[in-house]
Image (cartoon, rainbow, N blue to C red; front, side, top):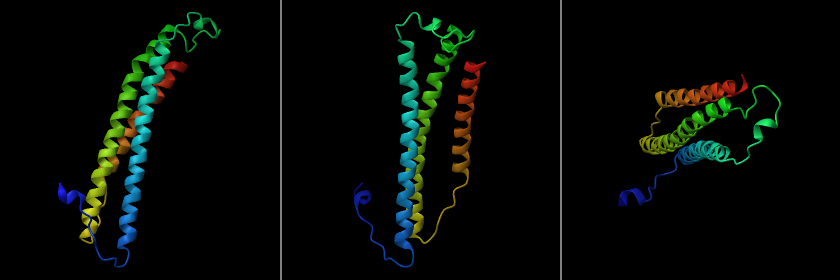
Length: 146
């Protein structure tokens, strides 16, 4: 544990400082992305929780369209999908933070050895998870619109 808090001093030859600072900026970008996912997840959970507890009984008569957003079937669809989407966003935020932290320490150790690890599989996994969340959101949108 003490080794974690000690400061590592290395000679600044060539682009060493620039590389380590770029690694720190990348960690901050991963953290920002993680906080964004967490915020979206909490927003999904809270928005639909507030919508579910609405006390307005005449809300369905406001919009005269045959299938409005306030129809019982549409509200049930939205409420059934909001928790999984919010949960996936929260899990994605935690995974992104974990992955970014892991990547930061991995790159830092490799930079100490004058090497750089190339990321392939992790990026593909994150892209697939992000696309699945996007597709789920599009399905939710089409369920409400049709």
